Length: 229
Image: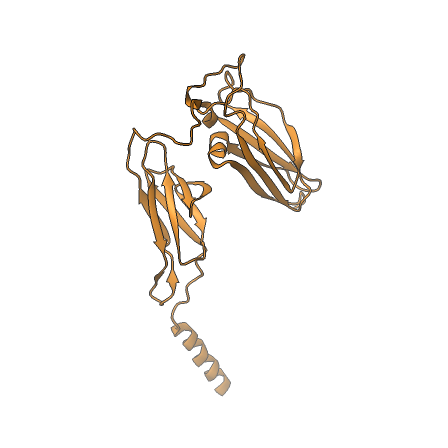
């Protein structure tokens, strides 16, 4: 009986303890209007608002939202004490972008916005020869990487068949070398990356070429799933 009473007292004590908060792992970034590119500490996240980012784990960080024809919205986010006295970031960060149609896109190479091509006369545009970083990793490693071009403007940029790129881990600095690619039509072109490994399910991801050119990188991690799972 005495043992039961002790257990009961301990149980009641646990129920009366202050609520222990779950460690904050994610932060939501919103913008008005939505669809803005999110940058954290001057580095692109490759996400658009509404976006979910990992907790940077520092005292503060700077978030910038970028959108065409809008002025950049910038905010420093600082940890604040919550009701338990623990310093945390806000669960959500909201930024408002000011519309300005006169803002020039400084990421456009000089003269690139005037380049015009056709399917029969692709030429050699500055976008075709832009060098970016390609990086792909998988778990487990050793997966074969294939890529192809998917175009919604086939009269300017042709679709391609699947081509072998290499095996994971793969890192190389190279151009897309997509004939007919311009600043204007890059938004309508995607690169499809597919990874294959014996005993595992194929995985496919698509990357917008314009965004990859802006970020000077196309990269991803593939967590392979066994075929029998």
